Length: 310
Image 1 (cartoon, rainbow, N blue to C red):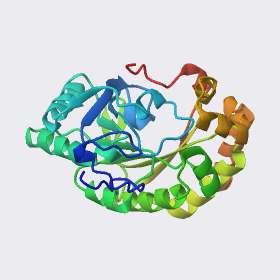
Image 2 (cartoon, rainbow, N blue to C red; image 1 turned 90 degrees about the vertical axis):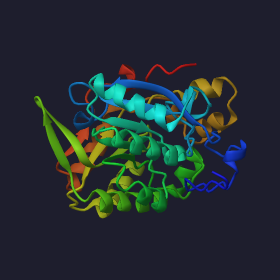
Image 3 (cartoon, helix red, strand yellow; image 1 turned 135 degrees about the vertical axis):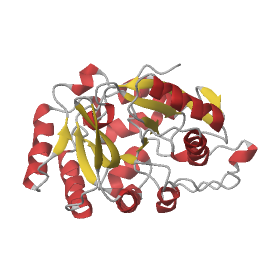
């Protein structure tokens, strides 16, 4: 924390002295929200839900972020690793199949310490690392022995689009390298039977959210993933249609970055058309992805955005 390099931004700021990098967080372990989440992939949420712990701040800062109320703000409650370990136990006692850390990258050392403390007390539920994919190889290596399942995004294949929408032209290469390390680390997929459900206890799920007006970009992402994943026994693909145009409200409130993004990509002002999503699913079939998660109905209108504290 004295010269932070936990994410690819490598801000080098002294977070232990109160400085804040792009993630917006100092050295505190800041939890924005906790809940039993029933809207993750079926093998993650299953019947009782995933014990999600949302952290404040984010190293990537996508301009269209659905969770901007917490990813851009230092909101929530400060936890010690010991208190976070207790929270993990409480969620599992409430029925959670696993503990799902959402955007933990910039707090990774404290989160791993919480896992260590919990396991010393007998905690054994799977740990899910729910990430934007914008990770360093070194950070993923440091997770070995602490993380069982990676739930990772792969947002872009284009450096230009990654720059325009997330300010991270290096996203494709960083996400590719991190994904390869995740695959090497977990080696294979494993499921455990819980009632009528199969719950993933080891493996990688790669998510790609289709953006409106960006069918060709999604196709390029799928081509890249085909080359990276191949026939790996460690990975499942998840193609998502739940993009919600919250960017419009931010632009209306005077957010210059949101307004600039809408000027460059005006389709971001709407949801994904069914025809666009179907085109991406069809292309996944053409590329040989014969098994993947996909979303039925109008996922955007059902709101997959939790009610975060203001």
